Length: 112
Length: 110
Image (cartoon, rainbow over all chains, first blue to last red; front, side, top):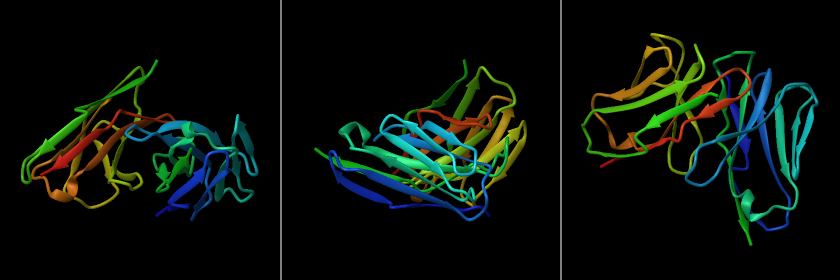
């Protein structure tokens, strides 16, 4: 079955440092989504990438979708304590596909 | 607007007792519904998904079952809980572009 690997599992950064998490799929994806889960909360949708090589930005967050549509990354510039949480990527193989497969997530800790 | 309700928020159950977690969605019809489990410090594990009433697919063999008696109702059950069933259970629905999660149920089996 489809597998989505995400690294690193944990990341501790000093406030102001940058952070990147990587997502890799065993199969070509139709789209990839990113979610953030604050401690004690539930995952919340951040963004979806659909096109090969697509890059999207949300303030200090930059999302990329690989040319082969099998990998993706989330980069946060100048982390803040509000960025703390677990970031998940989730891959879909097709429009309306019910196989939305999540990576294991990267837990980000920001040291003030 | 669409909303998803999941209850209870927390639950402490003894080993061997039954389980029933309920999830309902409002504001949409024929949603794809999911049950995920998140063990402490771990990622999201897909347990069940459903594309319609009475249609349940299981991703992993386990001590749990799911049912979808109505279009917008998804139930996670167990006849006899195990210690290893402890975790954070999340219900979600998706519409092809993004998934919406319920608030989750934190289950502790003692």
